[in-house]
Image 1: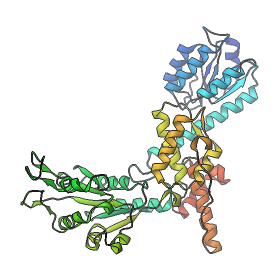
Image 2 (image 1 turned 120 degrees about the horizontal axis):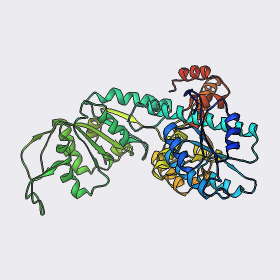
Image 3 (image 1 turned 180 degrees about the vertical axis):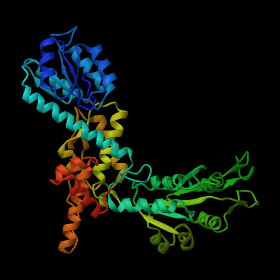
Image 4 (image 1 turned 180 degrees about the horizontal axis):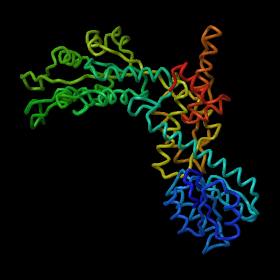
Length: 452
């Protein structure tokens, strides 16, 4: 390989000395390494981590077939899944070229080589590899969201994350309100992880998942002999969270019979186990969540008003995904990258119709629905692209517009920028290219609208 390590790294896998020389000459602006068989190619991959590889499918000991070349391709992509591999094939080998693409190769080029066409393909591969690296850096710096585990680019959600950061240092009781699947549990965990209680436990109880007859014992614990089967003294979940955070999920499903007992705990910060008479002081931070309308439940007489005000010292309304600009596509990219690695899919991207379908779908199940949809598509997709057919989605229209011309223009501009950033998974250079503006201009617009 050439001495200048700042140049673009290209690996040429070719057993013909004449073609080796031709390819070196064609890419004299690159840092070129050469390998003539599978073993030496894998050594070069490990040693130099080239961004792009050109590879003849006809490698020894099978120079007239593609068996060895395809096996080499599989190992390269297993070692370096982000490397862009361009396979070189003969005129009669079109079927194997398509097979290589299906395995995860970036592109193919037929012999005899056209230096100009191959140069164009290679440069495009370098450009795509650089964009992906920039995107990974963006994700690693956490600039998408300041809250652990939350992926968003929506300005409203980013402001909500800033609220969570400010509330984390306080012991105020927080109620997280929103539809199922919007991320209430993620935000509850963030309140704990960002607080000074993070060295203690966070204990969660889902009020909808535990039968009413067992819920009181689950929350407050019980003494030995308190009821049939109570063989030993058992502390409840609230007591177990001592010094940490207690997360009461789906609090709207808490039976009326237990609401009074929970209210007493919130007022006095003491509990009594079932069958016991001793008051036990407990120091915990309370966070609760529900998808139900508690004020409507108060009117209906199914939720205590005094308990509502104790639980909702601070309430945070979490918007559904359909109201978060660009988040559906951003989350889809996130889950695709996550499940691609888990399912050992070398290269997998969304087709244009898939991105359109994701943008237009209302996602009534919110983040949980997106996660399940993308997981299924990653498993079921054939080839290197996820299509709208793989997702099984239908298109819908977009929502209402604001009233004044200036509001229309500003909202449209902000929405277009947010959607463009989501579509390219947060890459500034690519988003600027899509929008037809320079990177400095895009940065100025992002600052104007509070986008990160």
